[in-house]
Length: 226
Length: 226
DNA sequence: AATCCAATTATTGTATACAAAAAGATTGAC
DNA sequence: GTCAATCTTTTTGTATACAATAATTGGATT
Image (cartoon, rainbow over all chains, first blue to last red; front, side, top):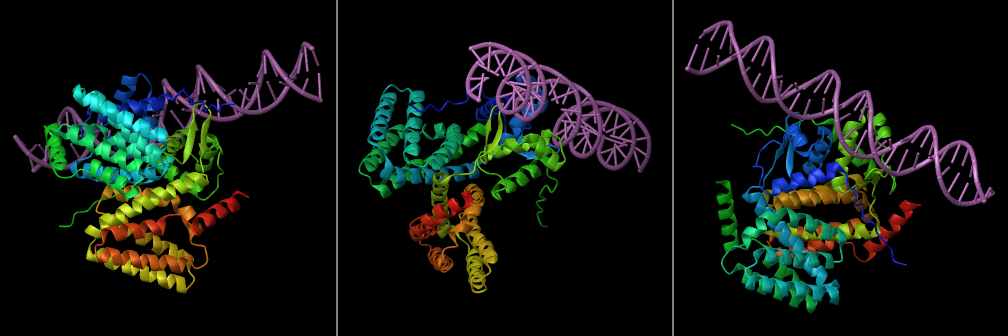
């Protein structure tokens, strides 16, 4: 008898709204320091202030906005320093996932990684950057899952999602997609051979913002600010 | 002229309540699966349901409770597997902090580490375990800060605080406090000599739940369940 | 014209009211 | 006696009302 985990499809409105506001912030609809007007949001979503406020409380905890008592809730777009810090942690988490996955990964997951890589290659050939980003994300999330640590997987996913808007920028550099592909293959090889250390260091290098990637990130932030 | 960062001392009631409920959960006042009754909590804190609900939303995001739509909010005490996963991530984060701190730590912070260690020793001699836990915490938080990565520091602190109730258990093993002290000294030495890898591995080993620590943790969980 | 103060207006935070759904109790059939 | 269906109660989720605080505006004064 199969065990069925039925995901609660019915979500609370406040939760849906929290996601939507999050997307608005990620999409750059708000600048750093903008106040999130409860009444305007309530009008926008066609609800009262109550679910809006519950949604905002969630965003406060997840760090996307800052709340000043009796003043309101303000969006907090990370500046260059915080972004570098977040990428540094992301690299560390990916390395952690890689080290664990090297010991724990299943054959099926290895096949899935190769599959994702293959589709990445095709996307590059076709110049389809959207497809590339999608498969790239699949590649990394497989590794998170194969860490065999659900808590780590969750944390890595959270940060990955939060950095998504900035990751696209990273890949716009000339030849960066090709190099990224080579790194992916190196990572898979290390995982296949259960080379713990190598898998970790390959992922660290792959994700870390160093050298040219650093300058690229800073430059793109300046452009976004204009 | 000194720059004064005035921390908003006035906190929202909902935030204070969120902290208090969090403490109740940490203190073991609720078992896994218990429903957090909004009305009872409202009575307890002498407020209406509104601030209670805002507080609960925060706890949902921080992962302490799970919300089932139209059913309520239920406390989610981590089971043995999730605990091990969390300790595994904690060890990884501490190692990350250690590697970075080895490159970035200040002389002043090194002195503070030695100071904390010294007070740890004294606490052991006096059999004052409360003082030991306090200084041990100070020791680790200094390292988080000296990673030079505020985002990492914050994440490490969050997880550290969440694991606090279970860490005490770890140190009850015979001779564990002495061994822990030796490990602290090894960590400081690596940091002093800017030995990146060694600082990381020493912290990993220090925090990871392995061997006897594993059995101790599992056993204590069983006792708590009785 | 610039600045300070008072009155007005917005906005947040909390309480209460109400609708919808779930849990629990009660009755009735078998 | 057990099970099922219906009715009642409880509880969640949302809207609205109101109080307290912050922002704003419009003079009055220098």
